Length: 110
Length: 115
Image (cartoon, rainbow over all chains, first blue to last red):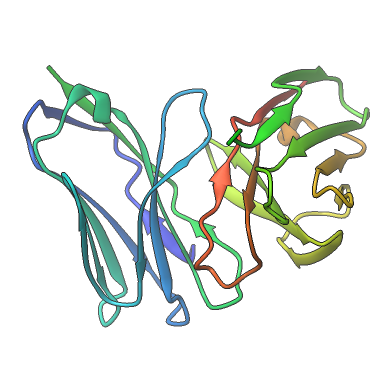
């Protein structure tokens, strides 16, 4: 069993939809949780960063962490075609290496 | 500020050969990490260097090695290439080390194809 599980999709939604992306994990030592976005032929870029449990909002993006359930989510409101990319969750323990999910391929149709 | 740069961007090698990939971190960043990305396994951590010392290592065979220079630039070497080594190799840099509050910035990657 992988330490971090993420549904690879692909996920296709119409423009303007609310998108929900999720990851589960097994290592209770994880304290830092991140979401990266990766466009085709590019390296991943950091979207959201959260420490421990709670919510964080940045524009149309909201990250949630539920450590009791070992579950993290990324919500995208009013999705745009430019949001079409692969979204990767990543997490680490203090002083630990970054562990990535498989990535979810998202397509937002105009 | 310039981003993380990686060279070359594309590489084709044959089985048994060796390859060296290069990464230049963002100016002022002292930590460099390497990752392998494949469709089947996703993004997997190879190793991290800080101040020319390997600080963390993933679960890859000894054929994969790296080093970091005094200017923080890093190289990754893969010897005796296998077909399964075909992947996108990503380099990421950050200012500090392993506190995890430092954001990692990724380069565009080197696409390695082993024939």
